[in-house]
Image (cartoon, rainbow, N blue to C red; front, side, top):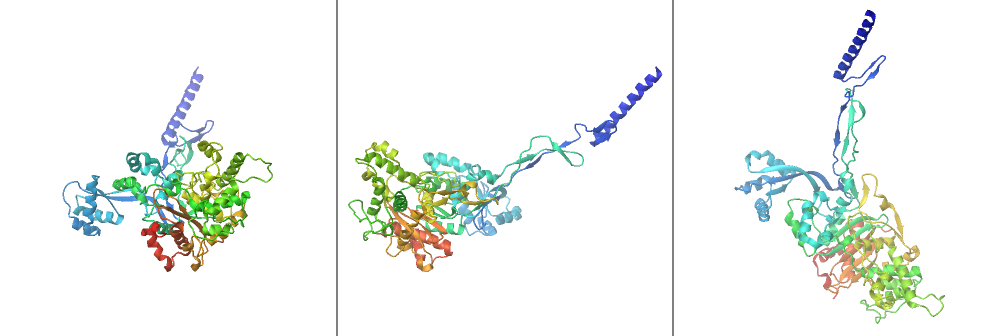
Length: 609
């Protein structure tokens, strides 16, 4: 019995020894290998840790890498609601002009807003150093989105999280106009890439700091990406100055890449006005302004393109065999009025040079009323007309018209191209003829295009039949543009037919052409373009122009639309020429400097009378 008891006591001693050893190891959190037992790993040997990473919102830079928007510190001066301040001394301390503080604070009290003023970092530092001398003033630092420029507001836009005050005001004040007026721009379209994603990691660490798996699911951290734009800020500022007193748009892009160089929606505004919480009064004025400065005109306003659309009709007619480049038609004003006094067009080049309306009446008629010689008479002209117009519509839509182009903005309108079904619904299957739709031949009637589509239409002609979707962002971080902006699109019109248009576009820029004022031969730049005058039943006609330069290997396409400015050749064309010259040369020739003030504040509609 005694040996057996001793064995039991010995076994109990060993167990107690191992338990004590385990307790010591647990206390020290150090795993150890025990012979015959293995590695002892108590369940709480590893310490859980949580590492969280909040991304910094990406920056927005222009094509020269100049900073346009960034997230950083902002500074506020909080004013006392009661009591008086020595405003003269405060102005002197901050280096402000006399009465500057009184003016700004009076404006705040009139708006019944919190008494806060935006100040600069230098002013903030001055007030911090003199805090003891001004106990009634408080300064505060906070983080917000900052805009380094006061241009390109429709392009930059805003993140919805930063513009809640504006969105609430828009719903309350603008009512039905709210959805047309809101435009988040690039800040909204690329919000997911700009803001990045929050990351949290959950490692299990031993006493030596070594990782042994995770104790919870990780969230992958992605830093906010910078956006490198194709926008030329200097050109953008120049174009906005020209259009300061106007309503309309300017769109300039690089045809070989689809990169947008300049994008003006006039009248415009300061991009910071929609995100700065202290500028509620400015936002109210923008929302209630009858000129709709918040409307993103090049993307959201579709208008008849006018005579610029004759280029599409000519290209499609050439493709479908309705005409040849040598086709001649008399300027028969019994068909349609022609506002230009010119000789009969003996070919397509002369017709484009003089923008002859009767000529292009015949061009579209040669497509819509065409009857193939192979058909046996009698022909069902109604059915044939449907087939012909359907073919015309199919080719026109291949230019990216009547659809969303897919530009990198959160809102865009598709434009409109009528179809046979459209006319059947309104006039009956055989209730319409070419005589009732001939206004399509000169870009009027039911046709509507946006400014982006018009610019892209000329890019297609400059490229002889293909295009890249217009876009603002040439690179996200270092990865280039989004994949969809690298995809080339081709029209249904052969390149040879686009080449047939070029001599007419160049002739239009000559002394006797409709766009002679936009000629840049004196500075060695060949321009090809087409003017347009859009009929307006409610006032003066609207002026349009679209063209590209240089003629060989074009580097810039410009589309201009100026509301109530009369003839396109007398206003829109010179405006486009200034943009082209500014971009290609960096300066304006003295002989054309006078156009800057004239376009900005002259009576454009009266100059053609």
